[in-house]
Image 1 (tube, helix red, strand yellow):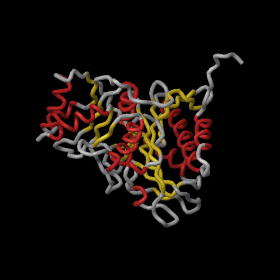
Image 2 (cartoon, one colour):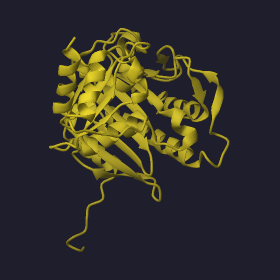
Image 3 (cartoon, one colour):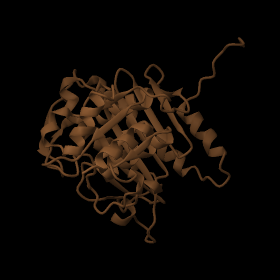
Image 4 (cartoon, one colour):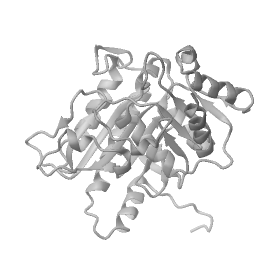
Length: 332
């Protein structure tokens, strides 16, 4: 074999290697990640074909948040549910698209894990061909009954066993952490496998001085938030990059560094992003990559959820920049 041959590591091989490091592992956790990856491949295929089939556009209904449901949203939600409901590893599921926790059908066995997911984040960008993504969070069941409950879903981010996202862009990438670093895998469509492409992802130091925020809401922000952005674009010497798709914006921040912000405002004091489906999983990923995640006052991972669709302001990225934001926001 040539001396310079690079080892090809699939997601399946990587997960098996991680499992072998834990003598008491049963394989259930690994299988859940396999199932999520399979769902991601199916969603990726439909995203790439969306312009050629009748799947673009709105499905004609609203989700629990009153937002028009996109057809790909419906498809992605269904694929994730069907990939996870029958495995015997899951106690209960929760989706951003569903008002209540999703029970495992009685005909299927249950397990010890809880999976929460946003099936297609950024779906308002579908029709204009901007990158979108799937976000997931895995917890261990904490109640004592056989099947999971709402209480199992309402756990702080600090209790997550794993978190990750799939970015459907010019290539499809799966990025995840189990609390021991962040690893990225790129889908090779010719063989249908996620291949390790970004091992041990860390936010660059020094980071790029870039901030990401939707400045269309400037007039609705608090004076402290307005002063922060004025400082960043003036004396702070920051540039602005904003895609408007959370997964894409966080992915760029992981690779380049910077500060992502989605604050509350006069009309939405808690912002628009959801703690359980977006805030907590992205916070775990960013912090495992050496960054920081905050709601502007406290660490995002320490926030105790009180409802399944709770919203929360988000400030994520390079630790010095998040700390800078917290200092500005603390000023009256």
